[in-house]
Length: 156
Image (tube, rainbow, N blue to C red; front, side):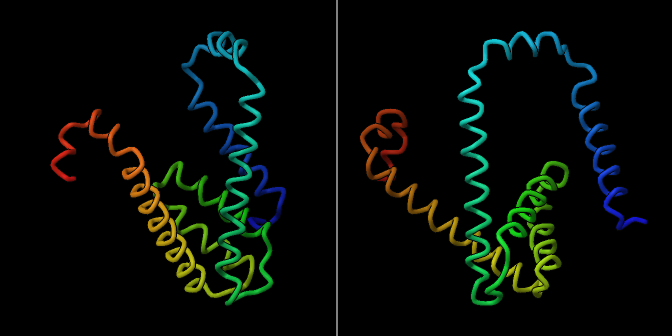
């Protein structure tokens, strides 16, 4: 019974409804509606599209890192695992780093250790990329940084 899709969907709807109730039960929804009337829907949809594409690229990257171990993994499995990991982070910080490799490994029938190793490699690649981006930013905007943060002169 627990594995039946109807039960799982019903449970997800109940949990989602409960979460929405907790989030909005003391809010002034008429004020929210007034604020949304002035919102630019194009910007909202464009931002949503960019966010979706960003998640899709991250799922593809995860799949590509796993290619030497499991060459026939599906992008949809990587995307689902990524989104489930993000959802888990909402109520258990860093829990998504556990959920994503476990779900992906079960769906694609690959060792969990391989999926976790790829997650660690992905984190390392992110850290190297962000460090490089920070370094380039500091070099390019060195003069402006010195004006805004005079104490930073000690480090040049």
